[in-house]
Image (cartoon, rainbow, N blue to C red; front, side):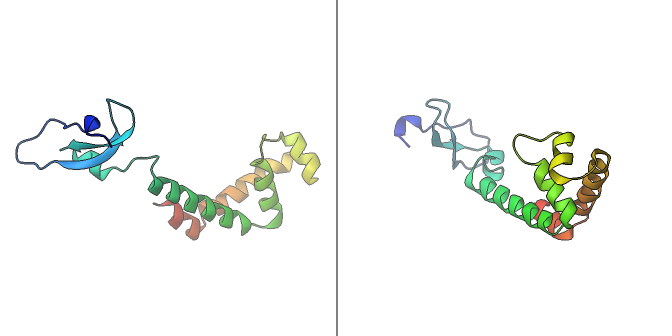
Length: 125
């Protein structure tokens, strides 16, 4: 942080200023800004390292929950999440599953994920 980028937000009576790392209006870098805004302190940067770690943990919990699904449900959900997303016809051919069974199988798999207590704890935040 350069001294030129240190700014002070308007002070509120009876409050003390704190330094918070956030984008600086002067240089667009992540500089320390003196502020009395408690929201800037209480609400971490959504793209910060904590948010990334939480996102990784949630993805790992989802992956683990999908791995606990029955074979047919697990293979279907994993296939549906591939990139680019396959069509139902492509899934039907690849998985040797009738097109009419894909939706109901997907719905049962998603219901099991919604009811998974370990996954629910992980995404509850």
